[in-house]
Length: 446
Image (tube, rainbow, N blue to C red; front, side):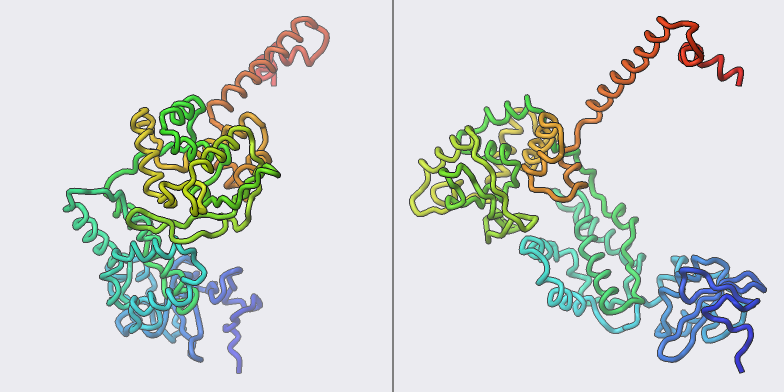
């Protein structure tokens, strides 16, 4: 016979009230506690909690493969006792959480998960992304033999502290933090949870990013004013001036400049097609390892203007026979390190490096912002940069807050001045003039 108090999934019972949008959780109206329940392999498990948050956490993270001691701490599993003591929530208690197993499978190691990740996730990643993951894999070397069930926030507290101590012993310190490495591990954990074990909770927390800070990042400026650009261009040697000005006037990425093929230039139609993006190796001199379509997957056909034609023809005249790359040094395509070093050398020479300008990408940001200022709309910027995402487009071509503030203040002053002048010539003509002239008196009368 069905128990009248057991009304799972319905609101008809008088003792329990189902919590909307929270599957497997209901409130006991007799004692005010929240019951979380779930059925695993045909066996029902449940526990009572004082708060909805604790009940949600238990339902997301509980599995019967936990040790008996852990099960006792979570609650009297497989019971329906509403009078149990639920004041201890092990998932929010660091001392208890340190002893809990994480996930269903207590035996699977991180090495096995990493192998699965490479097999099934790597094919969808770009070559550059895969190379970067493999290069930064050193951070995860001591994690390989660990069991996934042993990973919890306390484990990574100790792990990051150890990595940080080892890093600080290095006199040639270049690292700022472990943000990228933590993001890699976090992504692997999320992938594992989504595809293999929904009970596994990700132990990487915000505090680990803070703990991994070695030194503060220096502020990087991405939008150079026109006067500084003129100084930067004029100080570059001719070859690198052509590279930089072509990148600026086409608002391209440095990979698209380095990967530009002579066959992409059509002087008859006066067009150049941005269809090849150079993928650089992540280590060493960062040479080109392959050519791929641009980042958004689509080619862009740009019209050749006067200055662009000068640059293109000059590069073709100095081109080494047989080299298909327009920008090359003695027949060899550019490496990212060459571009980076030559740009930075001039930035330091002109004092712009000290103002926060670095590497190569500032030219694309600067071109987008100046285009918006002189043309007045994002449509022009989109045509230059090839962006389709409006949010990213606004990020690239956002105008200075000072410019907006000055324009807004001047318009506001002009608006109020117009009201004041208009009221002076029509004093006593109506209530509207009086409102403009004596707003405080109206407030007092009201």
